[in-house]
Structures are given as C-alpha cells and as structure tokens.
Image (cartoon, rainbow, N blue to C red; front, side):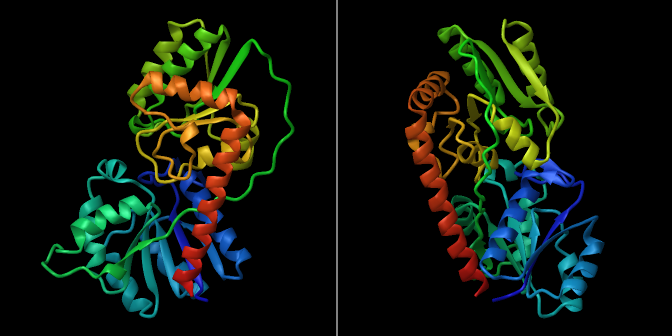
Length: 343
C-alpha cells in the first residue's frame, strides 16, 4: 500500500466545508479518513499548514507516495515547484463541495482546469454526482485544448466513525429542542428550517428551543439577522451556541429531540451523520446521499419539511435504523474505494 499524507490549511475558509482553524467539518472529515486508513493497515497522516510554502517541509519529513490537498487553497503554479522537489509524489486536490458551493469560489473552475493540465496532479471529489458533472465538461476539452484523461478525475469519499453515545438527560414533553447546527450559509437553508420548526411547535403546543451555531457565519450574515428577527417576533426561543470541538458538539447534539439538516447542497453532511450515530431523529434533504427517504424533505417546501418532522418523530426507531444502515453502507463503500485507490 502507498504512504499517504493529507494536508489542510489553517485559518482558511474552505469551500463547502464548514469551518476554520483546527476545528472544522473539513478537518474532521480528513481525520476520519486517516483513522479509517490506519485500521486498514495503511500509513496515513494529516497535517495543518500555514500556506503553500509549508507544503515542501511536511512532504520532506513524511516522504509520502501520495499527497492529498484538502480543498481549494494551493495555487496551481505551486505544483510546478513541488513536482521538481518531489518528482515521485502523486498530488491530489480533494474537493468537498457540490457545484452550487463551488460557484461561490471565483477561482474554482480556473484552478480545477489548471490542476488537470499538470501531469502529477489529479482532482478528486467526495461526491459521485459532482465528479460526474465535472467529467462531462472536462473530458472533451481543457483550457489549452488538450484531452483530459479520465484517470485524472477521481472519487475519494468521506468516512464517518461510530459515535460514543453520551449519557442522556430527561426531556420535557412540553418542550421541543431542535438542533440546526453547522456554519451559517445561504445554501444551508436555516431560515426556512427555523420557520418550519416554529410551525411544528405551534401545531403540537410545545415551546420550541431552536439551537444553532452563531459564531461561525460564512456569507450568511443576512441569514442570521433574519433568523434572530424571526424569533424576536415569536414566543419561541433561539438558542445560540459557540463552535465546539467535535466531541463536545456530539454531547450537545445528543440532547436534542430532533436534528435538522435540510440544506440546499451537501456532499455528505457530518452533522447529519452525527445525529444518526447518536440516535437523534433526523430531518434532512435528498442532498444527504446516504440518508433514508423517510427523513428527507423538499428543502424549499415548508409542508414537506413538516411532514418529515412528523414522520421521524413518530417513527424514530424506524427512521434511525434506516439512516444508520445507509451510513454503514456508505462507510463500507468508502473503505473499498480508498483501498483500491492506494493499492
């Protein structure tokens, strides 16, 4: 098996990942894959660097066969320098976004095509759909008119480990605690989810506590402003949380009656996987590829979201079992894909 090094950038806003610094969805995602590879007997490591100029040092120290750059942050011309310094290394830029998220990164398409022009660089997607979409527009041409080989575009999916179930606390029948966690962004669709939760609580005559991370706002400043105004004009409560490290976040999520991840674009959704692993009922959109249809709702339709809330809260054991099965199957496929890639 090949020796593989994953490199992420500190303090970077990653397209399609939800996070900055040393506690983010993207970094958690990369670490989950590294841990999975370790259990398969594969030599793997994840490092965080300050910028492009720190890559050479980490590669020199670890001497990998493959380097995976997590997300779009390495300028294409840097690979020309790195190829001269490390001619035997295979470089992979791994994308964690569907096309709607990539559209918000002005350099995304230009950089992706420039990566493919370099003989030692591949582009990988953690979403089969996005990989296929990009193949359709990159196989026939490239910026300088060359044919792009199919083996330059890869699928390297996410993996999610089983969570440790925290101790549960008693829940009041008169209250509904809904977690709608993750960075606040327009495509996360948090406002409509908040409105749907309020409507459900009104119909069920319950006091709603709508929990969100509000210290990580990535292009969603107006979204947060509207959500705060919504609850200012409601008898229900918005509960604002800071961004937590993953284990502490899981402890918080475990105390929710329901998790909502009805976003407009996803490639995997770690928050949804956390909910399923912690046995918290989940309502999501069809964008969460491994989720069961019983949990899925149309992200643009409040009635559809309400219907899904009723389904999963009334049939929580069935929906939980189906989602857990889907997540387990996703993990099994992921292990096979990574082993095949590195064999």
